Image (tube, each protein chain N blue to C red):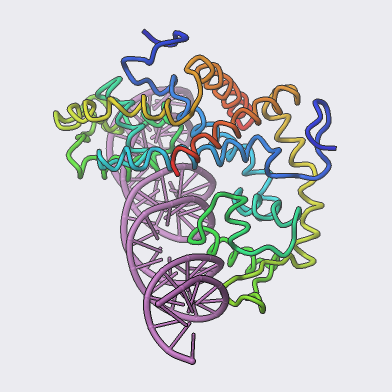
Length: 152
Length: 152
DNA sequence: TGTAAATATATCGCGTGCGATTTATATTGA
DNA sequence: TCAATATAAATCGCACGCGATATATTTACA
């Protein structure tokens, strides 16, 4: 019995698994983003990092990690690449030398302008009304919170 | 204006973006799966591949790639690792030597038994009623299909 | 005060994931 | 038939993503 409202399927089928739906939808998003982000010279995680900085400049690596749910082992090399491209600067915090502060350069700030049409493209790509999209987005964030709570 | 039903936000905010919701929910699933799959000695993509084979043995690399939305450049090394563990065998198709057929070994088949409690754990981790989960899963698959269509 | 514990970031190894290319085989059509 | 084209996997380079560990700095507290 598959797909009924109350039973857990006896056989595991990829297309009935919510984790696989999320996994493959993530890949699908990446494929839509790829040509849009190529114009900016950014990867998708780099783009997310820039968004976090456009919203709040001068953050520590840890603060970015919390917002993006990424470890320093992922962020440090990524930030070094953004620094190499000239979009950000990294400096140890004078008040607490353990921390590294990440700041946008003027180049990094101005990149935001080139990204302005991207959200509209993504919304178009989903083929869904914005209201449905917002509702779905909130449900997935709720799911994420439950999973994080369970994993912790 | 954020979060209204009709407007595209002026400022891009991570927590309002459906792509980020999907991206971070995917990571959250991975963190929940990690301890469960460690018992099987599998990674999450390896687990998905085994599920595809438990449902239909003796598939080509291309068929697995279609079902998992993965390229041969991802699958080939992954399948070699599964082969190295003794879960599968890979042989060129006699009828069409371009294709490689992937078959479960008896060890690979019996691994399914050790995975039987995993779906229940995942459902518990989501903290959602199964009915809601199925509905959400279908909505995300619909989203995925739209994105794939747009990317193509 | 001075040492143990905690905190923040960086480094390393391994497994994805994909675009671009290569190699081998099969199909097509002049 | 046989050369051009198409198809299927594999290979390579690069960028995540994380667990485990290392390093540096700060905090706690005996």
